[in-house]
Length: 102
Image 1: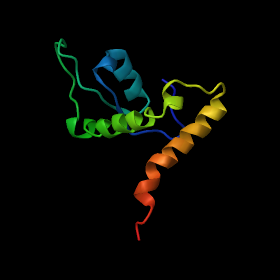
Image 2: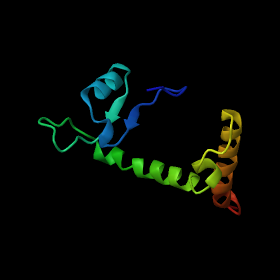
Image 3: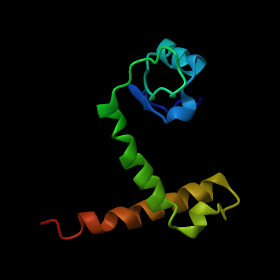
């Protein structure tokens, strides 16, 4: 997995990433995996379900961004123009929350 610039403390993921290799790689990197165990595991590792609830916010944010057809279908040819429109879409989503806050 490619890591962002800053090192995260936790990695929130769904059951699809529940594998010993993924968990071991994250722990060696100093990142705590917050991944619920699959139902067929013999000895399920512990999971912080309180932190896992924050994953819902992330999923909702991606859902709101994918409401923009241009982002969902990736019309842009270059990564630079895609990132620029992604920033515009995020600003359009967040703008109503910051206007008239006085």
